[in-house]
Image (cartoon, rainbow over all chains, first blue to last red; front, side, top):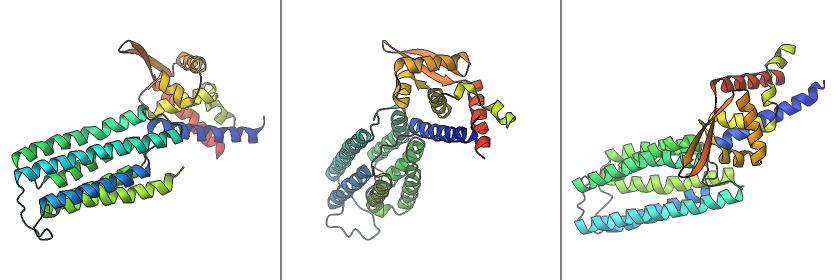
Length: 209
Length: 96
């Protein structure tokens, strides 16, 4: 028998095995563009929130901030609007990317990705709402970073590997932010804004198709 | 040389069967339609290769209902995982 020919066939086989293992277990249509846009949306949200919370206050000093009830409602609305806009943006860019790659957007790995992302995220969200109603407002910004980081790490098994390190950095930022409560919004802006933009650009350059 | 070839499994010589096993090794289960999309094959083609893997007892399936639509979930058996690992090892040895 022709050994050389067989060898070529088996190299093909191994390639095929790796490709299918990867495609069947990881959702790869995440687009860097969605990271970049989510980052900008977050920064705009932070800017508006700053205007609401720290108007007429010297916000670079580490001090207690008093947030009146009506500002709290505005903050909640800003948060809600930022989340909804971010989700819509991610869905838009991901669908576009999946179409370009001729991949099914709602396949098995996408479902696993979303479920694994949502479990820590919803847990953190509910906890933050509870704390909010009990008046522990300062801890909320760092906590959202921590739970978002945990969610990313949990979901990273089912998508591009960069998501794992992004999660680690978010957790670290959240923990540091929990210590410097007075700078909560700044840390939040770095985590949800600047980090998303950096990772978005990195992933856009790496996976550009 | 003979030794190595003995470990190569005829059941995985086919591209589609190789694909099915690759997907089932890294996923707990796969339903018929997702498998079809993943491997880009026709219904009949996939069904016949799944049947042959079932016959070798490398793959099992569970029938479930999603509302009224039947949904068959396929997964690899212990024997299937073992055999597939052996097959890959044999290929690796061959390529060394």
